[in-house]
Every structure is written in C-alpha cells, then in structure tokens.
Length: 334
Image (cartoon, rainbow, N blue to C red; front, top):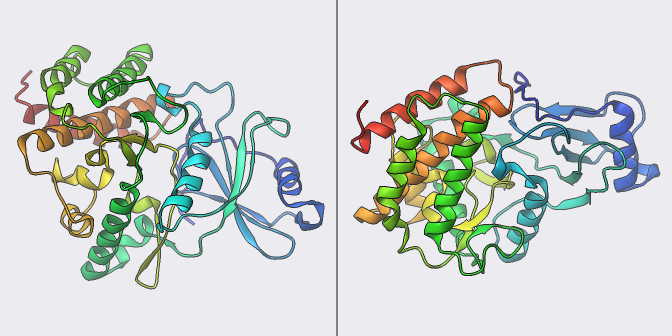
C-alpha cells in the first residue's frame, strides 16, 4: 500500500462506526468480526475510502463524505450525491465498466456525513502501476480510456452544468462555464490563495475568449476526472472507472484526457487517448476552449490545496508552475 494522501476532507471513522455502517447496509449477519476487515484505500484526495471484507468474504468499498464542519470549494458541495447518480446513469446508459452501488445513506445518523457502499473492482490502479508497464501496455490502456470516455460522452443531458437538478433554465454553455471558473476564483479569493497572478488576469483571459464557448449547444455527460489514477486495469483490459463525483453536463473537450494536449508536461498520453477517443480538437475555437478548460483545471488544483489543508507543497508547486506556463501561452506577460 502506498502512502496515505492527507487531506482534512478525509472523514475517517472508528472501527465501531464502520461496523455499524456495514450492518445497516448488508445486515447484521454479514457484518464482520474482529479488527482486520477494513483497510483504507490511499490513492484518493477528497473522500476517505475503505476496502471492507464482509463476514462471508465478499469485498466491497465504502466511501464517506467530508465532515460537515470542513469548508469545501463551491463545486465540491454534494459531490457524493453526484457520484451515486453518475454511477447509476453510466450503468444504465452505457457499457462502460463502473462499480454497482449497493447502499447509500444520507441520513447522517451513524456519522456526520453521508456514505455509500459499492462493488469492489478487482484489478490494479493504472496510475499506481503505470511505471512498471511497457510503453505498449501503457499506450493500450490509455487508448482504452479514450474509447470508454467517448462512450460516456454519448449520454445526452437536458441542461448544462451540475448532474443533479435541472440547472438554470436556458443557460448557455458560455454562461455555465464562465460561472464555473468564477466560482473557483471566488473560492481562491475567500481564502487568499496565491495564484501568482492577479485574479483579474484570469477573469480577462476567460472573458476575452468566451465566444469560443458559443458553438457548444448540446450538453452531454462529461466525466472530467478520468485520469490514469481513476482507471482500474487487469490483464490488458480496462475493468473499471472510479471516482465519478465531478461529472457534469457540458462540452466533451473538458475531459481530462485532452489536457496533455495543452501542456506537454501535463500528465497523460494525449496521442493514445485521442486514438481511442477517435477525435481531437483542431479548429481555432476548439483549441481555445481546450486551453480554457486546462486553465480551469489548474486553478482548481492550486486552490484546492488550501481548502484541503495540504502540508506537502508538491501539488501546489507543480500546479503553480503549470499555471504560469499556460498563462504565458495566452500572450499574458508580467
């Protein structure tokens, strides 16, 4: 097991509480005994997750939302409800492999947050084992991610924006996406996060290029957070995609697999992903939108380090350097 990713949003619970959650979900007769049946999964950055072995030996996964008193970013509110809805939608409307939800409890009776149990997907985390694979194996997995992502983007939405609810009636993608960026900037200002640039610089970059968003008129399911670390692989196949809480209805070009096309040093394999996806941005408007989406992603990655109370500066330092490089590609100079 790798080192635990620390964040104040991780709502760890005692063995007694975990057992009570299991009993509520699966019944007292399947609740485990002893103290070696719960293992924290360490790769996530937001929710705490445990691999649970039930009394009959079945393995399942438990995810618990952040504590009620922890401040989260604006877009991170109700993420667990979004993930449960996304998992159901993907299983119903596509053939993309995702775990089945077994039980969801939002009563906050057993702890101060909602939680859910889901199927355990037996395989390896691609982000963890990637360096042990051959180039050909990595390429094949990235291509498979591209294929799956294209299928996810075939699911239509009836509005732009959050997966849950109806969104703002008649809101355009320009209005929704610029609002998404503004939420991140306001979150940063509220906690005085140092972005390395005046906040007005980012508002101007987006405003000056917002017309590129106007050609997006059909909302579709966008996973957004589909990286190698959210892909489970086994024996040359993609066997599961996890962490769907950031899904929304929007522009497919917002998908994470396209991000490496904006900055060469960004993680990922754009060529293999695009080969699987079967399409890549090419027009001036498409390329501009992709850069705006990468800008939004990097702003999130910088600002969230403060909200999550990171003591390790590596994510902040990396994201700030990437943000500086991207801002310069917009022709902005200090």
